[in-house]
Image (cartoon, rainbow, N blue to C red; front, side, top):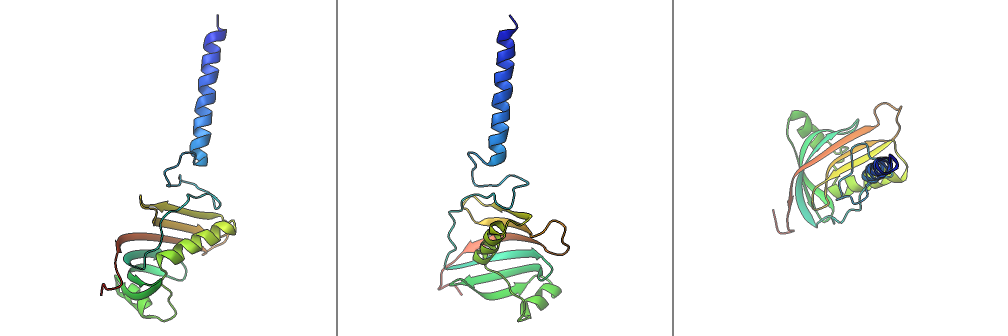
Length: 160
C-alpha cells in the first residue's frame, strides 16, 4: 500500500527537479537571464539598434567611470554630456570612448564568444539591454565592467 504514495512523491520530486533544471537553463525564458547566467548563456535579442536615440549610460570600468547622457545618430555617438565634473571631463577627453548601445551589445557578444568568466545582461521588454556586466577572468583584477543603460529615448535623424 505504500507503493502508491511513494510513486506519487517520487514523481512529484522528479517533476520539481525537472522544472528547476529547466528554469535554471532558461527553458521558456521571457528573454531575461537568471541571476548567475554564464558567459555563454543569454537570450536571443530581437532589439535592433535604431538609427537615432538618446540614453543615459552609467559606467564603472577601469577606463570609463561616470554617468553620461549620450546621443547616437547613424550608429555613432554625436554628443555626450557628463552628469558631474569628472564625467564632463571624461566626455571632453578625445581618448574616452563612450559606446553606443550597439557597441555595448557587441562587447557582450564578444565576451560570451571568448567564454569570459562573467558576461551577463538584463533586458527591457523590447529586448534592449538595461544592465551589462563583464568580467573576462575570474581572478584578474580591474577587468570588470558594469554598464547601466537608462532613460532610453528612440529618436529620428531630424531630432536636434
